[in-house]
Each structure stands twice: as C-alpha cells, then as structure tokens.
Length: 94
Image 1 (cartoon, helix red, strand yellow):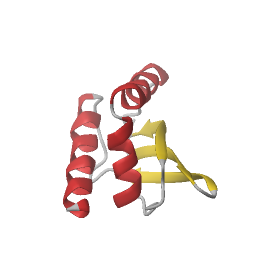
Image 2 (cartoon, helix red, strand yellow; image 1 turned 90 degrees about the vertical axis):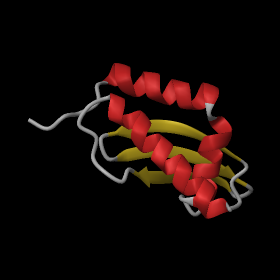
Image 3 (cartoon, helix red, strand yellow; image 1 turned 135 degrees about the horizontal axis):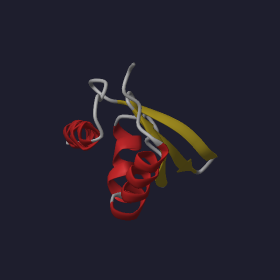
Image 4 (cartoon, helix red, strand yellow; image 1 turned 180 degrees about the horizontal axis):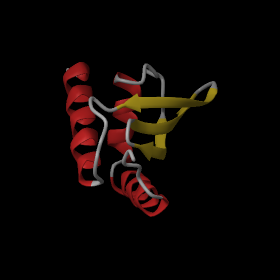
C-alpha cells in the first residue's frame, strides 16, 4: 500500500506553513505557481505529490498546485521537498 499523509500531519504542515512561512509561500506562488500578481498566499493542503495553495490576486483567489520533485514516502520528506521548492523559487526570482 502506498504511503499517504494522515489528516493530523496535513493540518500540522499546513498550519506551520501559514503561521511561519506566509512570505515564502507567496514567493512559491509568484515564481513557481505562475501567479506573479499574487498579494498573499496560504497553504490549503499537502499530499505525497505536492502542496496546494490559494493565492490572492487583484482579481480574486486562485488555486495553485506546487508539485514536489519526488513523491514523499514518509512525513519527514515533506520538509525536504518544501525546502527544495523554496530553493527553486529563490533561484527563479534571482
């Protein structure tokens, strides 16, 4: 059976991203999510394949899917994949 994140893990990850990394999530949406005009962003979900975000734009909210480079097979790998997304976003911004 394939690994899946449980609801407790999803809530913890999403809560942490929104509480501590809102600006980073916004950068992900702007650079990797193709929503350059985003003014705010919040994580809404995460699974073994990527991160779901809602970005606020002048035209309203937009759903953004940010796929991981690799499918995660344990919870600890989510952090590695999110950091990799951030690193790619910083490179894309610069």
